[in-house]
Length: 371
Image 1 (cartoon, one colour):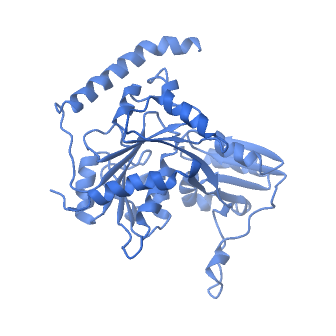
Image 2 (cartoon, rainbow, N blue to C red):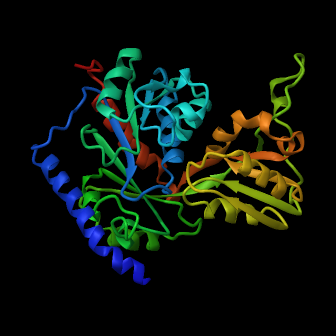
Image 3 (tube, rainbow, N blue to C red):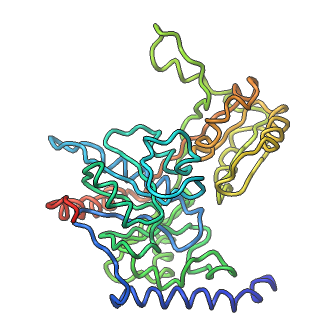
């Protein structure tokens, strides 16, 4: 390990100790934690960024809002802090004009247009739940990235950890990326190992389960990212008489000679590696997570894209680029594509995972009123 890691360890022990005392006070009821009389599911992690919370939240939204048999689709409210937004307080994402008002991920989720979904942002999750329930009557609330927000006591905690950097191989900030000691994983009802290789064997999965020291009754699932067909970020508007699907222009050649991967996410390597296999030569333009593109950034993007057949970005970055269409040249707009991502559970475990979610929601849906 680098020398800097050891130099930072005392600060990590101090930070981790403060978080441990805080968790102890919540565990013993010495600090108040608010419960709500409706299903509340928390999706989070121990590490800072990069574990795939948004695609997993999208997966839950898709499953929860789907109609089952004669039943009506559930109404799902997603509550997020809205990290990186330029506003404060409670906001309904439907009333926001851009990602800057509500954050990239909530904007991305709401813009997907799934029936039954409403997204909200608020730093104070307790106040956020109270206010959103005054606007809508959800059947279930998903808390995005609220594993350490212990003022709300969720009924079901889903903890994500990245395959390439499990929380047991990490350390508390600033020496590592963890927000608290690994003991915090014991609060989880379900653990999901994300961004796994496609060929991860069941034997390898069992070895990871042992390394994570999952407690009895704490199931561990494994997921990978699957990428869909490229979609134009700025499709041409079809004529009034044309069918709706003409809004989606065809993708670039099946294997472009030169492709530019544009990203502003925490862990862009899987995105880049996938695109590397889709072209002759891959150029990379990577910015920090939640990066706000400046005029200088756009000039750099124009220069990098000039020699490329296409530019592919993530859905999260597309949420920020949409409002900048007028600042991009027509040529760049023609080249810009979005790469959709979905979650796939390994070893046919998706039904088992969702049964846990469905059972919890069903058992806790009798009373949907908020005190």
